[in-house]
Length: 235
Image 1: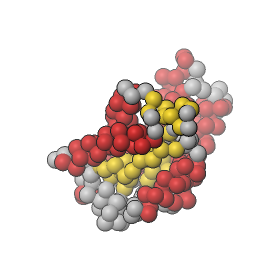
Image 2: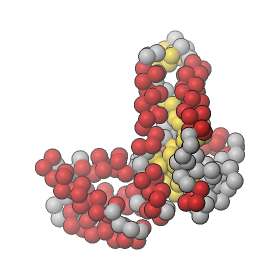
Image 3: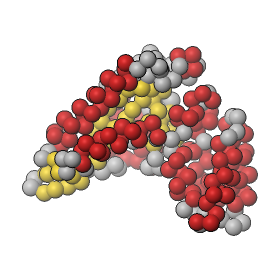
Image 4: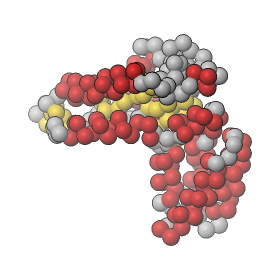
């Protein structure tokens, strides 16, 4: 977003964290504004969440950002899940236009496995099959395997909600739609007021929904904290 600072117009990053609490309901965990999405920015943000009482974090899902990954490991000692959708976009860029459909189908066979070990084994088989003709893609798969398949260690009924940042897309889209109307904000406080209002509206909507995002029966085995059991996204 663009904001006026000391007579200049600069770009700032607005980051939002959304999670699933021990009651199986989604909630907004926090937001922050900064000059970039560097590791120091993410570390400061996550420390604020920790000071406010965020505990029991099991998995953090985001796009491929080393700053987030390092901060998550340092602050929460949690597993990091690389957004599967974003990874596939990066992977298919190495496949060539004519080969994208086949490569996509090959990689999808790993996601279709029943458990983490089978998924890892299939992932490696696919990478080895692609290696002779697409060595860069195979190398990307080698490097990304533990991060893209992290969600497979969670209960099967959770996986469709953990493997990507898609659950955040609607919220991010609404924030973008309403902030683009403003264009240039007079100061960061104005950003906080508008984005904060959007987040409060969304949080209230999630709180009164009849159906839980994740059922209590399925969240109980992975949750170990009475406040927050399973945040699913930060980004």
